[in-house]
Length: 342
Image 1: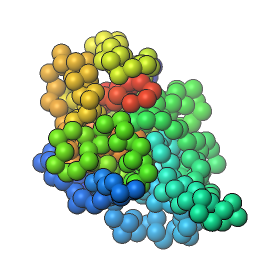
Image 2: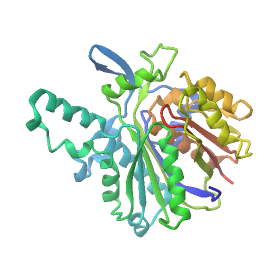
Image 3: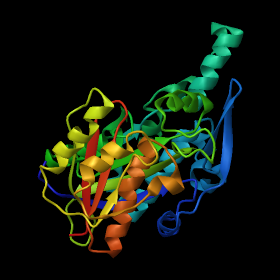
Image 4: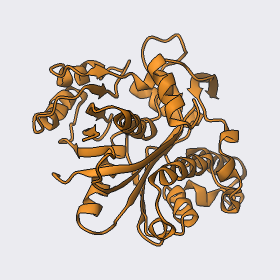
């Protein structure tokens, strides 16, 4: 796509907190959040979690009294992004909403099926089931802003966050929406950690030299028509899918060679994973400084991919530099975006 769109507002909910300037400063300094432990079947994984007390607005929403943690995370980031965008009440009611996630409400899903397995089919709780569907968070966000427009969930690996941005740009360029709220969120659960550890991108302990610490959180942006003095997404797209990890470098390079832009900052996605060298191979001709976001925020899949965009947007508000965000998904393919203050 050639149409440039602006990031009118951004927000996030992270294990480090919610303030954009404060969390960005901690990322630059490489500070680490408090580490907790997830356990399942005698195995343990370190994780970074979000303190529920940091979400007072969502905890006060009656609709969310019985909702899963991921819906609170997503709505918290959405509230911050929409506030930063300074939308009118009418514009809020016409927001198109795209919710990107890699797991959805896995904690409630885990509990729901655990009850079925132990106590039988009749034990399935009607209080838990609605939060097991992927679109639960999108519906809560739409209800909060009284939006009657699109409210859709997109599910995939980390690259799904950039897929949602590409979809949002298409909605703007085609006139389907005037503003698009894009939220990516993931929550920590031991069953997810057990599954992802098989892909060798989660570490087994804080001292493990391979893999990242599993994390949770949410990040959100409001996209709108290009405005001067607002961070702009110059382009955002996915490369061709790859069918083995060895094809990942070529897939990402295919994207980068289509756009002759020299970034000052690069936000890579594969720190401390088997795919790190492949990502470096695709970007080694770029001179931009590397920002190690996952050292401070951990591996939150769709959440941390969108957090890369939020961090690039925040930096662009105070600097003329252009940032490149790259994401290599472990299952679907590659994605990349350029964010600039032009």
